[in-house]
Image (cartoon, rainbow, N blue to C red; front, side):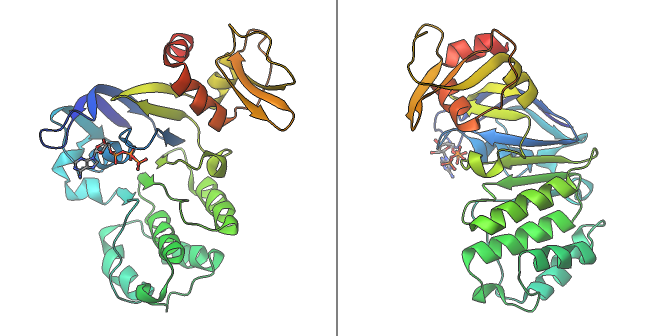
Length: 277
Ligand SMILES: Nc1ncnc2c1ncn2[C@@H]1O[C@H](COP(=O)(O)OP(=O)(O)OP(=O)(O)O)[C@@H](O)[C@H]1O
């Protein structure tokens, strides 16, 4: 469980990134963290990993105060930042050095992930492309078998086959004991994977809901003409007319379109808050 309680955070004297933020994340879920550029996704993930400290409030991860970064906390937490450093060594030497920090690390799993991503453990990080480096670190992170896995924009820079391999692998490691948090702008890449959805906006949580709740409360449709202007929360031109988001008054079963949801939430903040409160 990750409990963010009354968390305020700012960089030095700059205006707060978060102000009294509250959020509870529980095991058995792959959370999708969405927000515009600068909304605070990376800052929140770094607070969860204990790499940044709140100015007020707390971030507790499985009972540990994240900012204390106790060894027993760190051995159950893997954080893949958006921008990462890789030492100029072979992948297998990287694994020899870093895997002992993670008691549940599985070399067998790691080698399977590398094979899936078509990377050899004999390759040197300096000789890999950015996407290949990222895949090696994703494979390492998943093989650590930590209870908490946090990834900042993991699919950014991955080619199309790697994105589907990524989804497949994440789905295979998402157990009831694990919390996975993924921040992304590439919602279409992770559409079928992330659930619940958290949207950060203006130093607060604008939406936190499961896709089941979202599809119960909102309807995502394509219409030839937009008629019910008052009800429409968001609309945009599409090839066949307009893609619209409306309150789901008829309890219709419909698939959540995360990109439309995101745009609807940011265009019509108060209406979305009222619907989900
Ligand atoms: N090291 C830093 N020093 C000062 N301000 C920072 C620093 N890092 C981020 N910020 C500011 O904090 C805010 C939140 O940034 P953050 O990187 O957490 O957002 P983000 O949602 O991850 O953005 P993006 O989608 O562009 O990656 C922004 O206003 C940004 O300018």
